[in-house]
Image (cartoon, rainbow, N blue to C red; front, side, top):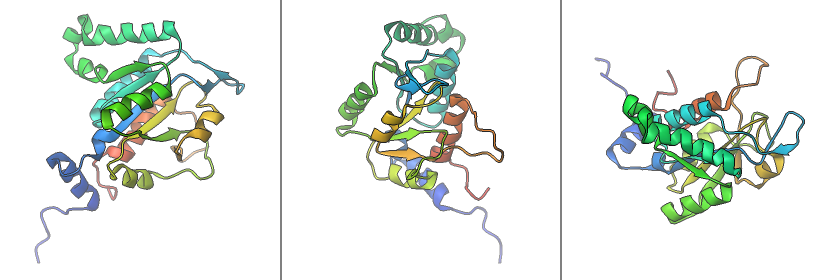
Length: 214
């Protein structure tokens, strides 16, 4: 018996359904990079500085995986202004003409002063509050795996995936989230990925279309 030309796996079928508009879970996963409340090396709660590379690289990842909006969260007025200048340069300034692909990615960025404001914005768009999922480099009891979150994304409810800067999200903030996603784990004891790298890996695991058996 001749082998089939191609094999339809559950994940491939899901990707086809998304492409054809039969399901729409990809468009309901929002991403936020928050600069407060996060902790420094000593564990103190701080507001960290906005980083140019974070805005560029996470926006590009978000665009690649169909995220509708990438929120940059900071309560500091000067950091909000810095973020606006960066975004403006690439969406309406010289950068937009020089690199149209970068413009398309940076157009996803929305600046907010707090996660509360982000939740309100998503609730207004989706007519319902998002399920808040936070990330952490440390393994936390009760955290959920990637397969679990992928299944949750298919229920039609909006989800907000929150990444922290500096040395990670403050513990009180993590405790208030609906759930915590298990950390990215390598094959060594080194555990210091940049948030840009972690975001790329996590979004690929959640929204990528490659066959899991590859």
